[in-house]
Structures are given as C-alpha cells and as structure tokens.
Image (cartoon, rainbow, N blue to C red; front, side, top):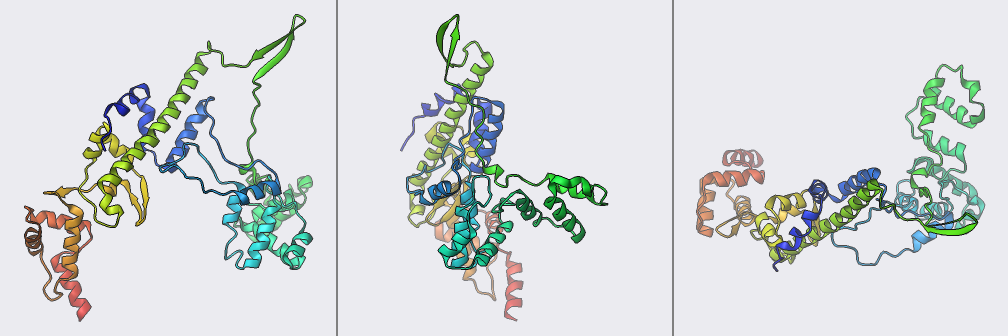
Length: 407
C-alpha cells in the first residue's frame, strides 16, 4: 500500500498551519475543548450537542429505545457530543446506592418521571403499585437521588432541590441548620439578616443550581428567519435572509469555519491512514505475534508528510486492539540488523527469568547470549539501557535479592 505523496500536499497549503497542527496533535478529549474555544470567537461555527430536548417520559423512552448498532467511525466522529441527562442518571443507577434489582427498578421508574429541568413530576403511589412495594420505600429510593449528579436532581421542587444540593456540602451543624431554614423561607430571607453567619450562608446559596439539570437543557438561542415578508410602499416584498457578501467580517469567519471542517476531515483521514499502514506493517502483532521494526520515517514516506508531522499526529493517541489498548507510539519499534528491539528485550527478560539464582548473569554474559542467538553486533551499554528500560535490576542487585529471598 503506497499513498501518493501529493494527496495531502494539495490540501494543507490551502489550510492555516497555525490551526491545522494543533488540531492534528489534539487527543479526542482535547479536541472537544479546542473546537469549543474556536467556536466562541466564530459565529459561523455551531457545535452539535446530542442532548434530549423532549420532556420527561418521551425523552427517557427515546433514550431507552435507542439502539447504537450502526458502524461507527474507526477513529472519531467529527461532531462533538455530550451525555444526556438520562444517560448520566442511568450510569449512576448501580450499587452501592441502589444495591438490589428492586431498588434499581424503582430508581429507573423515578428517572422515567424526571422532567427536562431535573425535577421529579411523577406519582409515588403509582410507582409503588407498579413495583409492588410501599410508597414509603419508593420515597426512600427517591431520597437517595440527593447523592447523584447533577446535584439536586430528582427533587420535587426548587426548595427540595436546594436542600438536596446543600446535603453534599461539608457544613457544620450550625451552618447547616441556618441554610435549611433560609431555603425553607426563601421569600423571607430578610428575617435572617441579623444571624451571625448570614453572609457565610448567603455565599453557599449563590452556588446552588436552578433548575438542577440546567447544564443539560438545550439552548434554543436566537431564531434567525430564513425569509422576510414585509410591505414597502404598499407592495408586498419577499426577501431571502443571506449573509451580506459585503460584510468582510462574516466572510472571513465563514471561510475560517469551512477551513475548520476541512481540517477536521483531514485529521480524521490522516489518523485513519496512519492506522492502515500500522495494521499492514504490524499485521503479525494483530494476529497474536510480535511487533516488527517500524519507524516514523516509514509512515512519513508513505503519506508524504514530514516525520515531525507524524510524531504530532500520534501524540497522546491510542488504539483499541484484541489485546488491549496501546499507544500509537508503541507500534514504532527500532531494530538492529532487522531484529526488533522488542524481540531482543523479550530475550533478555527470559534469560533473566531462567537464570541460576546462585549465579546471576552479568551484562557481559547477557550480551554474549544475544550475539550467539542473533549473530548481531551490539555493545554492553545497550544491554544496560534495555535492562533499565524494563526496570530489571543489575547483576549485583539481583544477587542480593536472591540471597534475601532464599535465606
């Protein structure tokens, strides 16, 4: 498999290298924050958040019935998403807070009756009848929601939500009682103004969220009409709402937004193609064998990039395999006379694992074994380096360890 070197060279000059390289270097988690930072400065960029905008039952049922069996992008989706309120609550419906199947079933019914703002608007008695338990037990399960995130979720109203939230604060008894009383009489806070710790309590009130699920609510934002219909000189006019081409600021931001989309697509394509080459070159590893020698330069030559660009592209990025999660950099293995350093290290490790405890191998003896096994030229200092990289003690240290162990 050989990629044409001009594949990317035709695209990158049209893009801003100042933005392209940071995007390429970002990990998936960092990319979200980076794009959001750019979007704050560009009105033409809108990040899609797949959050539920429906109320209570409909929103939850939609989440419950969603089947995510479609094939996903191998590297990453370009759109930035976040968990819905119901996904967040479902993840917390586990022991030790909800230790039994029955408690989890009731908790799920309660979640079903939490509306978009985060308040419980269901009927305790109905849930009790459905689950064949007492209303008192259902209410005790609902009270456990005060320990869930977001704080205040599952409360019946604003006051109870505030009480749920302060339950998670580390307060002394005096301050806790004062805050409870202030919340229960929110409309008459002036009566507490002479309390010695009123100002301290007031600071805590400032941090309370209302509604409790405010961070999950979809921001509808300003509506921009596509068409204007209006009268002018007794004549009905229809005007399509377009970006004014004379507006240089919007033209510039629109161009930057298009470039960002192109760069995200190029980043995805770059990581995908690097992975394709790695799987081809290291096929033996993916089917259960050892890694072979592979250099960054090999990938760079195939893709038409500089070696430093490949280094940026694989930084802090990982591949899920049948054998676990590995960093991209783990697949790049140096070699000596076409023998990978990984294989040599494994040989050293096995030598030491099987050495005589009464007479451990020194570095010179390990070197002689390697030369005999692989017929390669190597220095003793290389053995020291490999041994240290594998956290294997020196000959004298191992001898002392064996002595203590066998005494």
